[in-house]
Image (tube, rainbow, N blue to C red; front, side, top):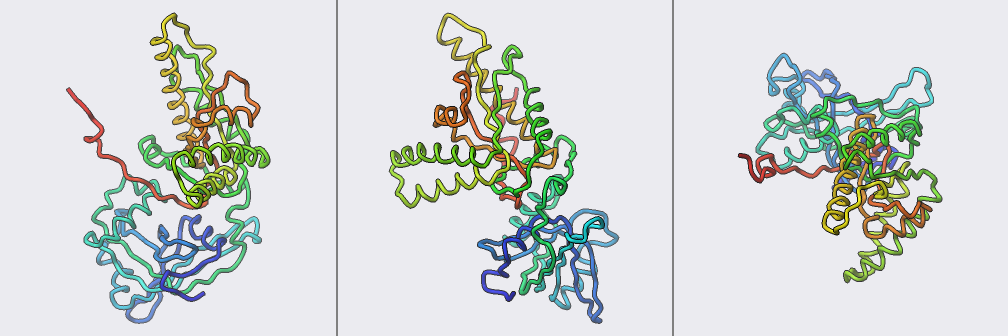
Length: 369
């Protein structure tokens, strides 16, 4: 496929394969015309089915020379023509073999390049190890692809439960920083024992009096997901109309929400369960008791999210049930005592999401005596 001003256009299968694989082979040419090949980590930038850039960090992993003296960097100075090969080999099943090759031209982004920070953010999103490295000053190789070629069973990158990513098993600081909110998932089913592991982790959250005032509904049936999307969509349409949103905006927002619900292999609905809480004769203390329950539900969901990321899964948090708890309860045929609070979408990420920045710790501390 040829290049356009918007980058090289790929098929959905090619894009998913390129975004989902973890290691590529980066090829440059020496001044004498010899090929030079190294394995690299990489991140992809683009939109609307086109790849506009691929980024490779010259990071702090052990190297025998400074980044500027690396053979690949010296090669680029003499000849910017490059190739990137992403491939998959399966010794047990040659029906899964596949590769994608991008050819193009490359240059080096330094700390003074505005694009460098965005490139490092993409790399940190994809690779948890980069989140603890001091990358801010490191050079980044930027590949501008001009042609692409692929072969093999690209779509089998998302084949099934047997192809699920392994547990990440990260140290706790990396686990906390690595967890991300994902909106697009691969279709791979999530095994029930794994889902139950996540809910078991939620059950260890602190709660008022140890009562665990929450229960979880799990939805995997496509028909039930569709019924939930329809019911919530009808309510949300009414609410957006009250906000003065025009019909086109309403339709676009509903389509995005519906895609998130139907595209996730598993929906977990955390519900407040207040029946076992202490009872007080005055309204103020009773309200505080219920607030404690809500706070503990947040802690339970965070446990669930961290457990999901640790096990190689990803998740997203949708708050929509807060605005229509009765609709969600009735659609899922839940007991009257359960109050839906959120929908946690769970599965294997189809692509690495853009991540929002975080405030520095100093901005989070209101007082420190």
